[in-house]
Image (tube, rainbow, N blue to C red):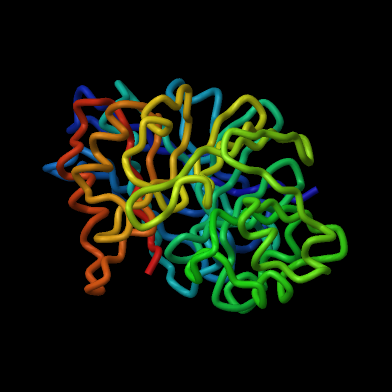
Length: 333
């Protein structure tokens, strides 16, 4: 078995100038292990930027611990032609201390994205674009609102589960579903899509969830949450809460700042829409998350009708760190 090569770095949030660098190398292959070269605090947000150099052509995983004993994966990075890699840790402002290590992974087909530990292994989130995210957990692959053809999804294989929130073309594409689905794919859709938009073959693999209905599939629970506003009629579309290995993940779909969303509880990760004029403004999104208090928020679906993509950063700015909610900005466009 080939063991990963790594190096470890620790910082102390209460003493930002103190950074201890400790080497932990396994000289099992010709290439050098990844080497931590810099860690620094962003002056406004107090987030930590970790930079390391590494041989090109490999996947690397950045892990973190609060005691340098129990490590959790933060992110698995794509194979890159760049020798200098970096990651911004948006959880750092909420922690007294944090240790980091970077590991070189065997192979080049590792699933990449942000990690969340569960009782049955990590769930990994990989943003695709606009309203679409791919998740992998416990050997299963989940596509949320896949659109724009198969090319963006070709490296993930066929999904075990596809979630569709509603019938608008930036969330539902019949042709993309046919292009990516496999022989055993399960499709979860609102009743409106089932009745009006699916082919006979797609209906044969579908599970219908209307607002307020839940089910269990592939070892996870799925609850359909009402998603509506002036542009999206009540009862026609869903948000989803996934119960995954003791964690709860919320995918908002297209919605306003609804009472049903504000009453959500124990949400570990929320994917939250905020484009004008079709869903929420950044201020409305801020009010929503202050009500249901997810631990981590990913702003997504944030490009305005004007083409501007500034809503996510503005949302993070006005929310601030006071509520103790981590905001992760990722590339959706």
